[in-house]
Image (tube, rainbow, N blue to C red; front, side, top):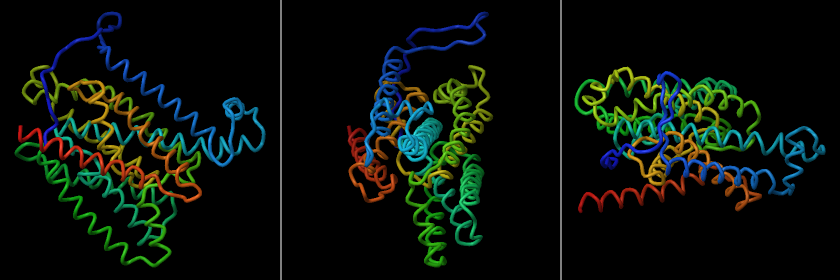
Length: 354
């Protein structure tokens, strides 16, 4: 399933640094969409922090955030709601940018870390720590990170040796993902009931009981990796044009592809290590962002904002609509993402027949 690539029209305003050493092209529609997504994020954050079993006003939330709130408001905002919200925003952005990079590299709408096995590799690493090593939650996170990176390395070694790298990455990734699902199922059957409950809770993907430690971990990861991804965004756009064109424009295609793939895998692995596998955000967010900005380029910044918004909205809905039940956010994103995937497959099928 190829991601549509129309003619590339270069428009917009170019900002240049003194000496013309660096430049930034701003497209009017992209700027408008970015501002709209930022506004929507602010609204969702306000609703998340003010609503719930304990209602707060905007003023009370602001006072709590600045350290001047009452004891109850301070506990609810700074201990319960804010760490969970920050974790959701960072994980959503990380997954979306990871998916956007992979979809651009593979030129395929299904090229996302949860489809081609990287997320399942993280799950395998976490399950090995839970079932075999009886590790702590910190060790589970490290195992998830290592599992995602090892899986990506295996897929990379299997893929980049001939044929179309993008097509081979998707096909090989789906095969590796199926194998890892079988391994994960086997590990679950070998676990005792307590280990199985712990593993199942992690595999569902949840933002419940997230503390500032979780928020700080994923916040630091995104603070380092997202700027790297954004800086590589221009090269990614050139690679989308084809290896020959990118090389003619001065891009080292091999090194650029490796750097982008590593960045994508690291973003997905860190996100999965913090929350468990949250499905379909990496698949849907980049596609929705592309649709809004109407650009043939990867649009990493709008994709990051869209991912943060999708996960924050999904978590808000599962908290408010199903309260007092503790429904994991993975159930919400799985439902939304499943419907989106069906729509995407039907749409692409109709296009191929036209």
